[in-house]
Image 1 (cartoon, rainbow, N blue to C red):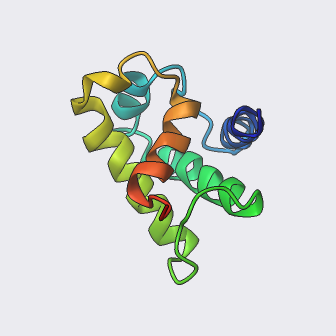
Image 2 (image 1 turned 180 degrees about the horizontal axis):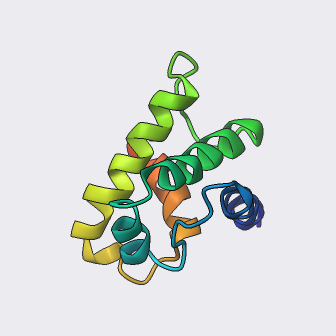
Length: 108
């Protein structure tokens, strides 16, 4: 439930930013729009990082800045996720959270 609420907040924040030309409808649309709207894509990733930290979600190291974390998440969304078929049907909002979990897995 919390994951869904966070996803909605991140996507809503990203869509409301001035660079809202970024297509958030799917991972492939997002990756394609990043070629022409890198600022909007980065804003979406940064919103997800800030939302995750505010909600104490995930295990992003404290010493990793929001900007560095957003760049890593954006790279994961653009280059890693599209190459893995298990992410094909996952929504972009869910993929942002999945990316955070994949990049910074929590120790068990």
